[in-house]
Length: 312
Ligand code: UDP
Ligand code: MG
Image (cartoon, rainbow, N blue to C red; front, side, top):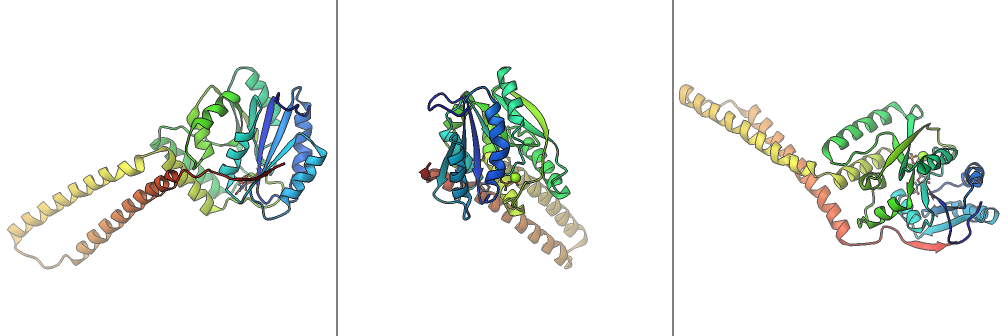
């Protein structure tokens, strides 16, 4: 049932970035699922500054399905910001973020809602099978989650993306978090609430190419860790202490040896190794500091995380 202005039950939020050719297919898959629900829905599509015909395709789809709302951002702000924009505009009792590429199966929404009815505030969609991802991507993802969950207080659920159901209560909690660098997966996990999960098999992207390459994923990983953990800052204290301790022992050995055996000239290699090693460590330490200071810098500007060009 399409929505009547202010009594929306289900809000589906979907960011689109250069998804030309995908819009119609997406609608054909998701609209029937939404129509099946006994309550009203809205489908919020965010055009994240696409450079192709995505926006006009969305507007065309809106002609056909009036439950679609289109937000167009003033430029490409990235998926996290686009999702935030959609969440800020969602009016439903339950909210489901979903990707436009049909990697998140819309049919699952019915199951997510069924679990919500049992009293869960968050229902995660868990991928059981990542065989559509490359081995390298799977391995690095696994290491990332292991490391991340070890060094931060936050437990990021593995194999879960942004596709999930959250209740209005959770949405309001999320909106209380003031940061404008929004790593949504972390934010979703941070707020907590009673959580259940549903498993599904992840499909291949239906069309176009994923815009997340290795550099992107690396940045996302850094973003996530620096957003939710200060261990990388603290580790230098221990690293420094260990190295100083070892140096002290080494120095004692040299002194004792000099006292016993007299002055020896050789030692160029060990000197070089020590200097290079310490230099490298120091540079890494400064790099980590830089990472956090950069984030503080961006946060202190208090810029909005997205700007809306027009709402259709
Ligand atoms: N997306 C976006 N802004 C961006 C990049 C991606 O809104 O700058 C959207 C994209 O259209 C898709 C979703 O985010 O709906 C997931 O993107 P993608 O499939 O490229 O990522 P992956 O599935 O590889 O994580
Ligand atoms: Mg995808």
